[in-house]
Length: 394
Image 1 (spheres, rainbow, N blue to C red):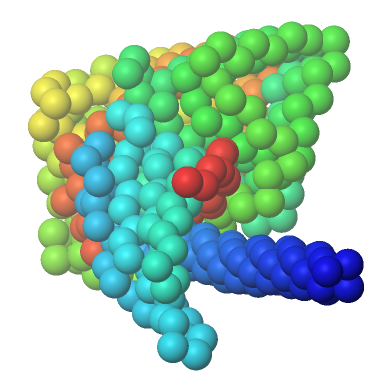
Image 2 (cartoon, rainbow, N blue to C red):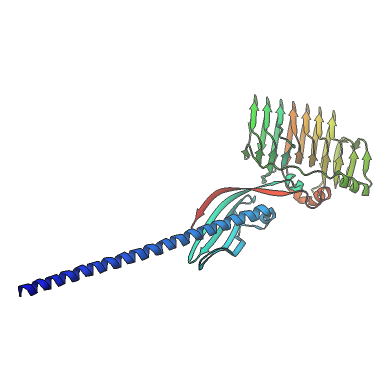
């Protein structure tokens, strides 16, 4: 009985040990399987996120390659990509399920890109908020703001004078300077712009204010200016029988079509003009020792003034409402000027003078036919600069 009892106890102990071993093995197997499944799910989620991230990158590339796409994006989600294959690994496939874009502000500079990626049974969402800065050598786009864009970097000089530059209320146009802003014993006020300089703002014995204006120095994407097509403008002016040799003074009130002047141009006296026209001069627009008033009678009237050699205002008073383009420099010397509309030039200098510029982007939108007449349908190349403002995942 003693020996049998000991054998029984050993058997029970052995069964208990085996049971514990089986339980531990089962637990270990369960944990290993669970860990494996967890690792697989984690890998799938990571791959789904990479796929969603790829969707955002593809959307940004679409916008970069086709800036006109921005015009189609509103405050409602706009579908950019749908069920696009991304990668395949074994029996699992990765898809960019959808990518949408929506505009976040009225001005069309801030956008949200939302991308959903799928890998296996995992799904992840990547969301990016971006700021889009349009930069263009398209004349129509540049004339919605102000551009001082020399071929090589050159400072805008304001010396012993005052310059007031403002955007029309409710607008936020772009102000490009390929160079710095050099203020010497002068005052400058720029209001309501997105301002980009390839150099810096330097103030010497003067002052400057930038209300409601963002200023970015050392900006690397200042656009270049497209070349003017003088031969085409001359040919168009010949069709209108409006070609002039030498200098030309305009004093009439009615304008139409295209004018070509193989010299300098001037405007005389008070002109409240009617009509829509392009005036092109191989020389410069010059105002010396005279008072000039040049303004449209109605919103339907506009002049686009283009010169090769610049705009020079000296010892004069000028009040001009027009769109102005020059391959030279705008110089205001010992005089005063009130310019309304837009200016694109290769230089700006104000010395011992007063200059007021008001930029109205709507002039370009209302008179796109005049811009097309001068520069053709395309008017140059367009591009955008995209800045990532925030990034999140779900």
